[in-house]
Length: 381
Image (cartoon, rainbow, N blue to C red; front, side, top):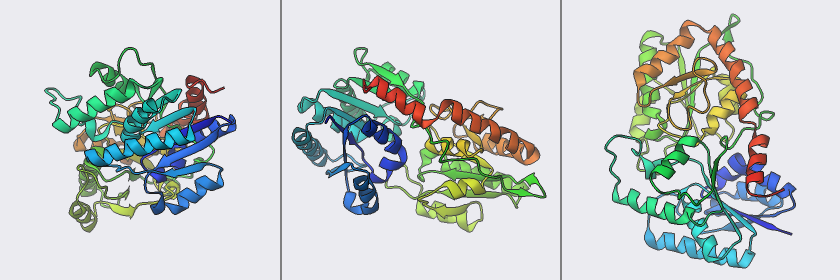
């Protein structure tokens, strides 16, 4: 039996973001191996993977930070794992699995190496801005990325802007094949249309953001726009789902507490299942500075929710401005509030754009179509 190894940096993301892809590969007759750190802290997720027939491997990897000794240990552990398991195919996603997984796979002389770029994150912060100057850390990360991607048989991107940026910066060499897929996709049958919140049969504007609490997710702009709207319409509710992340760009706990104390946002914490929160909302908001393709937007669209997001890489792939939602400039809380105001002034847009959003999710982002394209591009028939 052929073996497929997938490398992740966060156990909780495996089934949520890659579950359908892994199942599709398993259905092709592959023995599935999954490597990720800290499985002992995610016993429920580990058990779910084992029950599905996957072989789980705990590896040493820091999801954030750059400690050369610890990162070298990650490469060594991955190399040893690969020489033991001898997978026929390996796929890493997110920055460290892509870099260290690809380099280890090359050292282990594996026959098929693939990388999935799901978003750029801190390593590319400011890369699109005029006069951009790399920090020393960014220089190192870009060099590592370039070295790792040279080993790949193919690199998958989730939007054309990321692919173009990698080519422009010389990180993706002309000799390395690459392709763009429509994000991770969304299971449109699992995320079915939910009734909108209404009052006297009229849709109630209620906004929602689901994100790691990072500056680059536009969380501050969301809170600023909420404050603007609440100064005019105190009854409008703004829900926030997420958690304070261990990241240089993380929102400080005191900022979050201030928003809550001031009544700007209703903080729902970190939710295992976001569907009830989406069902309680009428408009989904993601003011992110850049994404691969935002999964939460796809989930909200599949459930029939209009979307406000930024005209930024990855985000703009999801919204046809004025049809299933609105695109606003990055870092512009005033424009964000203006888009929100449109739904308050014309609540019928909530219904109309929500229906269109569901259709876009089915036509463009159905997970089965996305996964079949990835299998074809990897040569798995």
